[in-house]
Image (cartoon, rainbow, N blue to C red; front, side, top):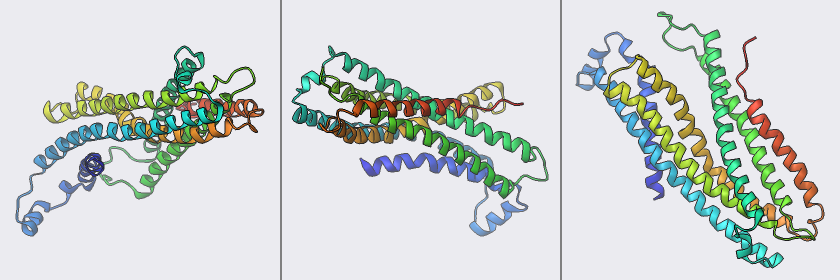
Length: 328
């Protein structure tokens, strides 16, 4: 399964980049290029058919990517399930709490943990898309201010300007990554510490276990949904361009708008759900082992509150710190 999944997932970027390389090469603008190709390679180039085939292959690549990503997420959930049950056994051996008490829907801590895990998954989906949207907006603003658009004498992009656009996109990707990672790290540590048993009750440990279960379950279905929805949006644009031949119409404009949502859906949020599930369950297992240690239980609530405040700060930063700036 591994090699097949990697091959299928790699097909999409290959076809996507092939189309981009063709467009950026401006091969049709090179003088006497058809004669040169015929002389060197022995065939008559058909640029119109070439563009058609590249467009069709790009649509197939989108479908391949949408089908392979859920497989990768599924492997993360399998690993997460193993670690969650390992945590349940650790709690049983350390605290003597039976698994049926932890995984009991009549326990309010279990329900609260499920709701919290689901909320974190949907927050992550929105925060990662916000970082992509803001980065793209700033890149477009830079292009409008510094690059001559519509100049017939300058069809090739300036290398320095291209580097600046890449720099802008990279910076916003890193900013979004830092906010999300620190918030997830702080949530895992905070909720593990707040789930530590106390003198009144030991059932609070079920809160963190159900939180990890919700991360895995909600993350799996959210990733599958976003991969498929993103592929649908992207291929809707391809159908209008390739099959209906309506590029440049209002229908095409509408599908382009949909594609701006579909791309971060399938290429950002759905893919990133894989490391989110793995990191949260792996680090959560370690954090919970520390939290239920007898020597740490007395200060666990204080540590939990501190890290929970840190997590909330970075959650706020992931949205309000990544907003599209208003023009002055």
